Image (cartoon, rainbow, N blue to C red; front, side):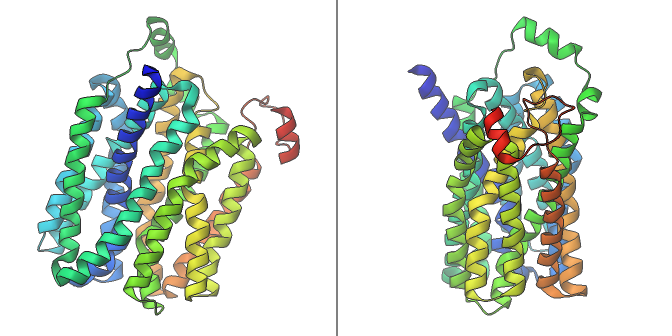
Length: 408
Protein backbone atom coordinates (compact mmCIF):
# COMPACT_ATOMS: atom_id res chain seq x y z
CA UNK A 1 0.00 0.00 0.00
CA UNK A 2 2.86 2.32 0.83
CA UNK A 3 4.43 1.61 -2.57
CA UNK A 4 1.19 2.51 -4.36
CA UNK A 5 0.88 5.72 -2.32
CA UNK A 6 4.48 6.62 -3.15
CA UNK A 7 3.84 5.92 -6.83
CA UNK A 8 0.95 8.39 -6.93
CA UNK A 9 2.92 11.03 -5.04
CA UNK A 10 5.69 10.77 -7.61
CA UNK A 11 3.14 10.79 -10.44
CA UNK A 12 1.46 13.97 -9.13
CA UNK A 13 4.77 15.78 -8.61
CA UNK A 14 5.82 14.56 -12.07
CA UNK A 15 2.65 15.98 -13.60
CA UNK A 16 3.21 19.34 -11.92
CA UNK A 17 6.87 19.41 -12.93
CA UNK A 18 6.00 18.61 -16.56
CA UNK A 19 3.31 21.28 -16.46
CA UNK A 20 5.91 23.87 -15.39
CA UNK A 21 8.90 22.97 -17.56
CA UNK A 22 7.19 21.62 -20.68
CA UNK A 23 3.75 23.21 -20.85
CA UNK A 24 4.56 26.60 -19.33
CA UNK A 25 8.26 26.75 -20.17
CA UNK A 26 8.13 25.48 -23.75
CA UNK A 27 4.67 24.85 -25.18
CA UNK A 28 2.63 27.79 -23.91
CA UNK A 29 4.93 30.25 -25.68
CA UNK A 30 2.70 29.86 -28.72
CA UNK A 31 -0.35 30.85 -26.67
CA UNK A 32 1.38 33.95 -25.24
CA UNK A 33 3.07 34.85 -28.54
CA UNK A 34 0.26 36.92 -30.16
CA UNK A 35 0.11 39.17 -27.09
CA UNK A 36 3.84 39.19 -26.37
CA UNK A 37 4.55 40.01 -30.03
CA UNK A 38 2.48 43.17 -29.75
CA UNK A 39 3.92 44.08 -26.35
CA UNK A 40 7.55 43.83 -27.53
CA UNK A 41 6.79 45.03 -31.09
CA UNK A 42 8.51 42.11 -32.84
CA UNK A 43 7.98 40.19 -36.11
CA UNK A 44 7.19 36.49 -36.46
CA UNK A 45 10.78 35.92 -37.56
CA UNK A 46 12.00 37.51 -34.34
CA UNK A 47 9.46 35.46 -32.40
CA UNK A 48 10.88 32.36 -34.05
CA UNK A 49 14.36 33.37 -32.89
CA UNK A 50 13.07 33.61 -29.32
CA UNK A 51 11.71 30.08 -29.59
CA UNK A 52 15.03 28.95 -31.05
CA UNK A 53 16.86 30.52 -28.10
CA UNK A 54 14.89 28.34 -25.69
CA UNK A 55 15.72 25.29 -27.79
CA UNK A 56 19.39 26.33 -27.86
CA UNK A 57 19.48 26.37 -24.07
CA UNK A 58 17.88 22.92 -24.02
CA UNK A 59 20.14 21.48 -26.72
CA UNK A 60 23.38 22.80 -25.25
CA UNK A 61 22.77 21.37 -21.78
CA UNK A 62 20.65 18.22 -22.17
CA UNK A 63 23.68 15.89 -22.37
CA UNK A 64 25.33 17.58 -19.37
CA UNK A 65 22.08 17.25 -17.41
CA UNK A 66 22.44 13.48 -17.41
CA UNK A 67 26.07 13.71 -16.30
CA UNK A 68 25.23 16.17 -13.53
CA UNK A 69 22.32 14.01 -12.35
CA UNK A 70 24.63 10.98 -12.16
CA UNK A 71 27.26 12.84 -10.13
CA UNK A 72 25.17 15.29 -8.14
CA UNK A 73 21.91 13.35 -7.77
CA UNK A 74 18.71 13.49 -9.79
CA UNK A 75 16.72 15.27 -7.08
CA UNK A 76 19.10 18.20 -6.74
CA UNK A 77 19.44 18.48 -10.51
CA UNK A 78 15.67 18.61 -10.89
CA UNK A 79 15.37 21.31 -8.21
CA UNK A 80 18.08 23.33 -9.98
CA UNK A 81 16.25 22.96 -13.30
CA UNK A 82 12.85 24.07 -12.00
CA UNK A 83 14.55 27.02 -10.29
CA UNK A 84 16.12 28.07 -13.60
CA UNK A 85 12.72 27.88 -15.33
CA UNK A 86 11.02 29.87 -12.58
CA UNK A 87 13.70 32.56 -12.79
CA UNK A 88 13.10 32.73 -16.53
CA UNK A 89 9.37 33.25 -15.95
CA UNK A 90 10.03 36.11 -13.54
CA UNK A 91 12.46 37.72 -15.96
CA UNK A 92 10.04 37.51 -18.90
CA UNK A 93 7.29 39.05 -16.79
CA UNK A 94 9.41 42.17 -16.34
CA UNK A 95 11.47 42.26 -19.55
CA UNK A 96 11.02 45.63 -21.30
CA UNK A 97 13.27 44.80 -24.26
CA UNK A 98 13.47 42.10 -26.91
CA UNK A 99 17.17 41.42 -26.29
CA UNK A 100 16.55 40.91 -22.57
CA UNK A 101 13.82 38.39 -23.32
CA UNK A 102 16.49 36.32 -25.11
CA UNK A 103 18.35 35.77 -21.85
CA UNK A 104 15.31 34.56 -19.95
CA UNK A 105 14.08 32.38 -22.82
CA UNK A 106 17.52 30.77 -22.66
CA UNK A 107 16.89 30.13 -18.95
CA UNK A 108 13.71 28.24 -19.85
CA UNK A 109 15.62 25.90 -22.16
CA UNK A 110 18.45 25.26 -19.71
CA UNK A 111 16.00 24.65 -16.87
CA UNK A 112 13.95 22.20 -18.92
CA UNK A 113 17.08 20.20 -19.79
CA UNK A 114 18.08 19.92 -16.14
CA UNK A 115 14.56 18.91 -15.11
CA UNK A 116 12.72 16.73 -17.62
CA UNK A 117 15.25 14.04 -18.59
CA UNK A 118 16.49 13.49 -14.99
CA UNK A 119 12.89 13.32 -13.71
CA UNK A 120 11.78 10.75 -16.31
CA UNK A 121 14.93 8.69 -15.63
CA UNK A 122 14.25 8.87 -11.90
CA UNK A 123 10.65 7.69 -12.39
CA UNK A 124 11.73 4.76 -14.57
CA UNK A 125 14.42 3.75 -12.06
CA UNK A 126 11.99 4.01 -9.14
CA UNK A 127 9.11 2.16 -10.84
CA UNK A 128 10.69 -0.06 -13.54
CA UNK A 129 7.65 -2.35 -13.80
CA UNK A 130 5.31 0.57 -14.50
CA UNK A 131 7.52 2.44 -16.94
CA UNK A 132 4.85 3.21 -19.54
CA UNK A 133 2.25 4.24 -16.96
CA UNK A 134 4.58 6.57 -15.06
CA UNK A 135 5.89 8.24 -18.23
CA UNK A 136 2.32 8.62 -19.47
CA UNK A 137 1.12 10.14 -16.21
CA UNK A 138 4.06 12.54 -16.06
CA UNK A 139 3.68 13.69 -19.67
CA UNK A 140 -0.03 14.29 -19.11
CA UNK A 141 1.12 17.39 -17.24
CA UNK A 142 1.84 18.94 -20.62
CA UNK A 143 -1.85 18.70 -21.51
CA UNK A 144 -2.89 20.07 -18.13
CA UNK A 145 -0.57 23.04 -18.60
CA UNK A 146 -1.79 23.79 -22.12
CA UNK A 147 -5.37 23.63 -20.83
CA UNK A 148 -4.64 26.28 -18.20
CA UNK A 149 -2.61 28.38 -20.62
CA UNK A 150 -5.40 28.31 -23.20
CA UNK A 151 -7.84 29.62 -20.60
CA UNK A 152 -5.69 31.97 -18.52
CA UNK A 153 -3.57 33.81 -21.11
CA UNK A 154 -6.48 35.14 -23.23
CA UNK A 155 -8.44 35.94 -20.05
CA UNK A 156 -5.57 37.94 -18.51
CA UNK A 157 -4.98 39.76 -21.80
CA UNK A 158 -8.67 40.61 -22.01
CA UNK A 159 -8.84 41.84 -18.42
CA UNK A 160 -5.50 43.64 -18.18
CA UNK A 161 -4.70 44.58 -21.78
CA UNK A 162 -1.03 45.12 -22.61
CA UNK A 163 0.28 43.66 -19.34
CA UNK A 164 -1.85 40.52 -19.47
CA UNK A 165 0.91 38.43 -21.03
CA UNK A 166 3.34 39.61 -18.35
CA UNK A 167 0.93 38.51 -15.63
CA UNK A 168 0.74 35.11 -17.32
CA UNK A 169 4.51 34.65 -17.03
CA UNK A 170 4.25 35.75 -13.39
CA UNK A 171 1.53 33.16 -12.75
CA UNK A 172 3.80 30.49 -14.25
CA UNK A 173 6.57 31.57 -11.86
CA UNK A 174 4.36 31.03 -8.82
CA UNK A 175 3.46 27.50 -9.96
CA UNK A 176 7.15 26.85 -10.62
CA UNK A 177 8.06 27.75 -7.06
CA UNK A 178 5.36 25.37 -5.79
CA UNK A 179 6.94 22.60 -7.92
CA UNK A 180 10.33 23.36 -6.36
CA UNK A 181 8.84 23.05 -2.88
CA UNK A 182 7.04 19.75 -3.58
CA UNK A 183 10.11 18.23 -5.23
CA UNK A 184 12.21 19.19 -2.21
CA UNK A 185 9.70 17.61 0.19
CA UNK A 186 8.71 14.39 -1.59
CA UNK A 187 11.19 13.34 -4.27
CA UNK A 188 14.17 11.18 -3.34
CA UNK A 189 17.05 9.73 -5.36
CA UNK A 190 17.07 6.01 -6.13
CA UNK A 191 20.03 4.24 -4.57
CA UNK A 192 21.46 1.78 -7.09
CA UNK A 193 22.24 -1.75 -5.99
CA UNK A 194 26.00 -2.52 -5.88
CA UNK A 195 25.71 -5.12 -8.67
CA UNK A 196 23.69 -2.78 -10.86
CA UNK A 197 26.24 -0.03 -10.36
CA UNK A 198 29.05 -2.33 -11.51
CA UNK A 199 27.12 -3.31 -14.62
CA UNK A 200 26.41 0.32 -15.41
CA UNK A 201 30.10 1.19 -15.11
CA UNK A 202 31.10 -1.59 -17.52
CA UNK A 203 28.76 -0.33 -20.22
CA UNK A 204 30.18 2.04 -22.81
CA UNK A 205 27.83 4.84 -23.99
CA UNK A 206 29.25 4.45 -27.50
CA UNK A 207 27.60 1.03 -27.73
CA UNK A 208 24.24 2.65 -27.08
CA UNK A 209 24.94 5.56 -29.42
CA UNK A 210 25.66 3.08 -32.23
CA UNK A 211 22.60 0.92 -31.59
CA UNK A 212 20.59 1.16 -34.85
CA UNK A 213 17.28 0.70 -33.04
CA UNK A 214 18.05 3.56 -30.64
CA UNK A 215 19.25 5.74 -33.53
CA UNK A 216 16.00 5.14 -35.42
CA UNK A 217 13.97 6.12 -32.37
CA UNK A 218 16.15 9.22 -32.00
CA UNK A 219 15.54 10.25 -35.62
CA UNK A 220 11.79 9.90 -35.13
CA UNK A 221 12.02 11.95 -31.93
CA UNK A 222 14.05 14.61 -33.74
CA UNK A 223 11.42 14.95 -36.46
CA UNK A 224 8.69 15.19 -33.85
CA UNK A 225 10.75 17.88 -32.12
CA UNK A 226 10.90 19.98 -35.32
CA UNK A 227 7.22 19.70 -36.14
CA UNK A 228 5.69 19.89 -32.69
CA UNK A 229 7.54 23.03 -31.63
CA UNK A 230 6.41 24.73 -34.85
CA UNK A 231 2.81 23.72 -34.25
CA UNK A 232 2.84 24.76 -30.61
CA UNK A 233 4.45 28.16 -31.21
CA UNK A 234 2.49 29.23 -34.26
CA UNK A 235 -0.89 27.47 -34.30
CA UNK A 236 -2.67 30.12 -32.24
CA UNK A 237 -1.27 32.92 -34.39
CA UNK A 238 -2.29 30.91 -37.47
CA UNK A 239 -5.85 30.64 -36.15
CA UNK A 240 -6.13 34.35 -35.32
CA UNK A 241 -4.71 35.47 -38.68
CA UNK A 242 -7.10 33.10 -40.44
CA UNK A 243 -10.06 34.95 -38.94
CA UNK A 244 -10.78 33.13 -35.68
CA UNK A 245 -11.36 35.32 -32.65
CA UNK A 246 -8.89 35.32 -29.79
CA UNK A 247 -11.56 33.77 -27.58
CA UNK A 248 -12.30 30.95 -30.04
CA UNK A 249 -8.59 30.23 -30.51
CA UNK A 250 -8.10 30.14 -26.75
CA UNK A 251 -10.99 27.70 -26.36
CA UNK A 252 -9.48 25.40 -28.97
CA UNK A 253 -6.15 25.49 -27.12
CA UNK A 254 -8.03 24.58 -23.94
CA UNK A 255 -9.64 21.63 -25.74
CA UNK A 256 -6.16 20.65 -26.86
CA UNK A 257 -5.04 20.64 -23.24
CA UNK A 258 -8.01 18.57 -22.01
CA UNK A 259 -7.60 15.84 -24.61
CA UNK A 260 -3.80 15.78 -24.26
CA UNK A 261 -4.11 14.91 -20.58
CA UNK A 262 -5.38 11.43 -21.44
CA UNK A 263 -3.38 10.79 -24.58
CA UNK A 264 -0.17 9.65 -22.87
CA UNK A 265 -1.37 6.80 -20.71
CA UNK A 266 -4.07 5.68 -23.17
CA UNK A 267 -1.56 5.19 -25.97
CA UNK A 268 0.87 3.71 -23.45
CA UNK A 269 -1.76 1.08 -22.57
CA UNK A 270 -2.45 0.41 -26.24
CA UNK A 271 1.26 -0.10 -26.88
CA UNK A 272 1.45 -2.61 -24.02
CA UNK A 273 -1.15 -4.75 -25.79
CA UNK A 274 -0.42 -4.16 -29.48
CA UNK A 275 3.27 -3.25 -29.39
CA UNK A 276 5.15 0.06 -29.52
CA UNK A 277 5.76 -0.16 -33.26
CA UNK A 278 2.09 -0.57 -34.17
CA UNK A 279 1.15 2.30 -31.86
CA UNK A 280 3.85 4.56 -33.30
CA UNK A 281 2.78 3.81 -36.88
CA UNK A 282 -0.80 4.70 -35.95
CA UNK A 283 -0.02 7.93 -34.09
CA UNK A 284 2.43 9.27 -36.68
CA UNK A 285 -0.03 8.64 -39.53
CA UNK A 286 -2.72 10.55 -37.64
CA UNK A 287 -0.40 13.51 -37.00
CA UNK A 288 0.48 13.69 -40.72
CA UNK A 289 -3.21 14.12 -41.52
CA UNK A 290 -3.71 16.56 -38.63
CA UNK A 291 -0.94 18.86 -39.88
CA UNK A 292 -2.45 18.96 -43.38
CA UNK A 293 -5.96 19.93 -42.30
CA UNK A 294 -5.37 23.65 -41.51
CA UNK A 295 -3.33 23.97 -44.71
CA UNK A 296 -6.24 22.71 -46.80
CA UNK A 297 -9.05 24.22 -44.70
CA UNK A 298 -7.91 27.24 -42.61
CA UNK A 299 -11.41 27.52 -41.10
CA UNK A 300 -13.01 26.86 -37.73
CA UNK A 301 -13.77 23.27 -38.79
CA UNK A 302 -10.27 22.70 -40.16
CA UNK A 303 -8.58 24.03 -37.04
CA UNK A 304 -10.97 22.15 -34.75
CA UNK A 305 -10.21 18.84 -36.45
CA UNK A 306 -6.50 19.68 -36.37
CA UNK A 307 -6.57 20.39 -32.63
CA UNK A 308 -8.62 17.28 -31.80
CA UNK A 309 -6.42 14.90 -33.81
CA UNK A 310 -3.17 16.41 -32.54
CA UNK A 311 -4.25 16.46 -28.91
CA UNK A 312 -5.46 12.84 -29.05
CA UNK A 313 -2.10 11.61 -30.33
CA UNK A 314 0.84 13.92 -29.66
CA UNK A 315 1.31 13.33 -25.92
CA UNK A 316 0.90 9.63 -26.58
CA UNK A 317 3.51 9.92 -29.33
CA UNK A 318 5.95 11.42 -26.81
CA UNK A 319 5.23 8.60 -24.37
CA UNK A 320 5.70 5.92 -27.02
CA UNK A 321 8.98 7.35 -28.26
CA UNK A 322 10.39 7.82 -24.77
CA UNK A 323 9.42 4.27 -23.77
CA UNK A 324 10.76 2.89 -27.07
CA UNK A 325 14.15 4.51 -26.46
CA UNK A 326 14.53 2.34 -23.36
CA UNK A 327 13.06 -0.85 -24.86
CA UNK A 328 16.21 -1.72 -26.78
CA UNK A 329 18.71 -1.49 -23.90
CA UNK A 330 19.22 -3.06 -20.50
CA UNK A 331 17.85 -1.30 -17.38
CA UNK A 332 21.18 0.25 -16.27
CA UNK A 333 21.54 1.85 -19.72
CA UNK A 334 18.02 3.28 -19.95
CA UNK A 335 18.92 6.81 -18.74
CA UNK A 336 21.76 6.98 -21.27
CA UNK A 337 19.50 5.84 -24.12
CA UNK A 338 16.76 8.25 -23.10
CA UNK A 339 19.20 11.14 -22.84
CA UNK A 340 20.65 10.25 -26.24
CA UNK A 341 17.34 10.27 -28.13
CA UNK A 342 16.33 13.42 -26.25
CA UNK A 343 19.37 15.08 -27.84
CA UNK A 344 17.83 14.40 -31.27
CA UNK A 345 14.58 15.93 -30.01
CA UNK A 346 16.47 18.99 -28.76
CA UNK A 347 18.15 19.45 -32.14
CA UNK A 348 14.74 19.32 -33.80
CA UNK A 349 13.31 21.88 -31.41
CA UNK A 350 16.35 24.09 -31.94
CA UNK A 351 16.01 24.35 -35.73
CA UNK A 352 12.20 24.22 -35.90
CA UNK A 353 11.23 27.76 -34.83
CA UNK A 354 13.83 29.44 -37.06
CA UNK A 355 12.72 27.42 -40.09
CA UNK A 356 9.08 28.23 -39.36
CA UNK A 357 9.78 31.95 -38.92
CA UNK A 358 11.60 32.01 -42.27
CA UNK A 359 8.76 30.13 -44.00
CA UNK A 360 6.04 32.33 -42.50
CA UNK A 361 7.68 35.70 -43.16
CA UNK A 362 9.57 34.87 -46.35
CA UNK A 363 7.56 32.29 -48.29
CA UNK A 364 4.01 30.99 -48.06
CA UNK A 365 2.95 32.09 -44.59
CA UNK A 366 1.59 29.73 -41.96
CA UNK A 367 0.40 27.28 -44.64
CA UNK A 368 3.99 26.73 -45.81
CA UNK A 369 5.18 26.05 -42.25
CA UNK A 370 2.45 23.50 -41.54
CA UNK A 371 2.92 21.82 -44.93
CA UNK A 372 6.60 21.48 -44.06
CA UNK A 373 5.58 19.81 -40.77
CA UNK A 374 3.37 17.33 -42.59
CA UNK A 375 6.18 16.36 -44.98
CA UNK A 376 8.60 15.86 -42.07
CA UNK A 377 6.11 13.69 -40.20
CA UNK A 378 5.68 11.57 -43.32
CA UNK A 379 9.39 10.75 -43.05
CA UNK A 380 8.87 9.80 -39.39
CA UNK A 381 6.02 7.52 -40.48
CA UNK A 382 8.37 5.69 -42.86
CA UNK A 383 10.90 5.25 -40.05
CA UNK A 384 8.27 3.77 -37.71
CA UNK A 385 7.39 1.17 -40.33
CA UNK A 386 11.01 -0.01 -40.26
CA UNK A 387 11.11 -0.34 -36.47
CA UNK A 388 11.87 -3.73 -34.93
CA UNK A 389 9.79 -5.17 -32.12
CA UNK A 390 11.81 -4.85 -28.91
CA UNK A 391 11.48 -8.56 -28.16
CA UNK A 392 12.38 -9.65 -31.68
CA UNK A 393 15.88 -10.68 -32.88
CA UNK A 394 17.88 -7.93 -34.54
CA UNK A 395 18.00 -9.86 -37.80
CA UNK A 396 14.23 -10.11 -38.00
CA UNK A 397 12.49 -7.83 -40.48
CA UNK A 398 9.66 -5.65 -39.17
CA UNK A 399 6.42 -7.59 -39.20
CA UNK A 400 2.88 -6.55 -39.89
CA UNK A 401 0.91 -5.19 -36.90
CA UNK A 402 -1.26 -8.33 -36.63
CA UNK A 403 1.77 -10.57 -36.54
CA UNK A 404 3.39 -8.35 -33.92
CA UNK A 405 0.39 -8.89 -31.65
CA UNK A 406 0.64 -12.64 -31.99
CA UNK A 407 4.36 -12.62 -31.24
CA UNK A 408 3.85 -10.62 -28.09
